[in-house]
Length: 376
Image 1 (cartoon, helix red, strand yellow):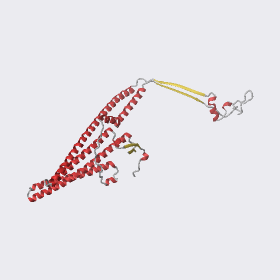
Image 2 (spheres, helix red, strand yellow):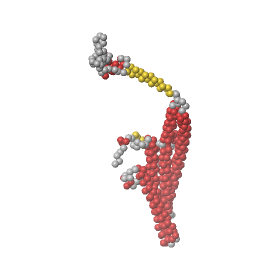
Image 3 (cartoon, one colour):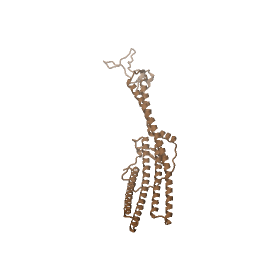
Image 4 (cartoon, one colour):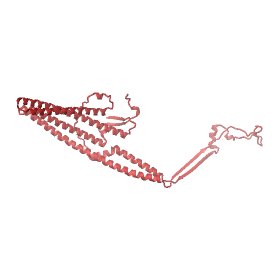
């Protein structure tokens, strides 16, 4: 079970999963293309050997006078043509290796660019079964384009409800209640000429600060609620919107956008359904080709065994045995190609269902910039 972390903060989880899915699909396709290219090279190499043997036999026949010189020319042309095919097959291997290297590593200085890739796995036949309805329902639940379309639809509904609320009456009720603390030092009313305290009729100084308010900040907190210095305020505001043509136009436009989005979703669902059906049909076709190519390979094996028995009995020629061997190699290659196409068809179905990661035991994990490795 391989866990992959999204360390690219610019990618959403859905985008990251789609990117990984495409990468895995491309790597699997490139790997089996390399397997096919190597097997094709082996067959071309055997064809060259067969052509060289035919050329040698033709020259011997010309020497003993049992064949015309033109037969040697034909044999030489065939040998040269097969040499060209062998060179082309070798180039195909190199290209397939480079494609696989570029998918495995994005570092041009990585060791993989200096090594030869030798595939060790051969495609074995493991039948993949899934009914059409299950595959379609799975795809409709998993495909990211449908999820994004649903999110867009939800956003349209939210904006529409907001505009509809803006057309309703609005009542705003606000209230405020508080207290004022008062305190200060004691003092008396002074005569502006003499600077002395003014006395009342009883001979006592006229005080400026009531005794209950004399003190510092602590006394101010105490008097906030005890001396009646409280205040409150209550306000009611009613907003009655008149007809707002701008909001009406926005709501009408959002209704149109919603219908368009629903139509887009239905078209996407239909497109996914067609994609699933085509992928499953291709899977079934490739399954049948695996069966028929297996039969063809077994028949080629039987023909080779029969030709070898005739050769041992002196009833056949070495060239015919080699030709049967070449036919068997070709049949084996065609069977291999059928198996590879079936493998790739399975990947196509899993990719269409958006289950390729789970089918290959990959898990998407949360990542953070703190976990980004230093590549310097």
